[in-house]
Amino acid sequence: MWKLRDIVVAAILSVVCGAIYLSWDLLTGIFAAAWSPIAYGLLNGLWWLAAGLVPYIIRRPGAAFFAEVVSAFCEFAFGSPYKWGAVISGLLQGAGAELGFAMGGWKKYNTAFMMLSGALAGVGNSVQYYFQYGGNKVAPDLFIGYVVTTMISGAFVGGLVPKWIGDALKRTGSLRNFELGKSGQAGR
Image 1: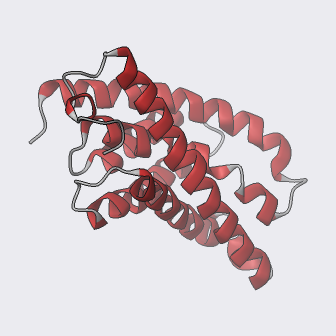
Image 2 (image 1 turned 135 degrees about the vertical axis):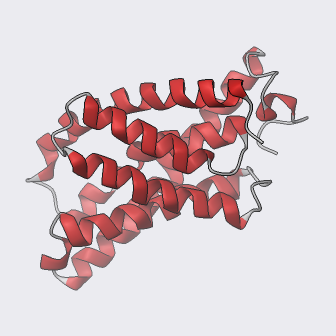
């Protein structure tokens, strides 16, 4: 069951991630037209930072989905060039990430499950790319390459980076009232 502090911290981290996402929107827009879909897929993992960080810290069912949807809505509200597409991204990427944690029964937050969750968020992103952003118009090998590089980016940037951030925060002692802080060892 979620506690009030879980909701507050999840919301705060999600808002911060929404601001990061907006910055990433603007920065990656420079590369979008010039890069192939395969190369561009490598940039995607940062957009589901919240979907890894929040559940890693609070360890509650629904945390990945909640965090990603809230952060995507904030990204939209802050002025994302993707407009409502940002919110759709949050729904799909959050669902993918949540599936990864569900596969571990919401009890496994080790490196493998963090990377799995990030990779599955990449699958959610790829669905949107196919239907909304023209993935259905590129050659099949380019689309498959996009899916693969997006999943790799998700595993590393959307999975390992949030684990690294959470473990660093745990070492400060600031997470002692959260599930990650109560675990005997970082990442268990």
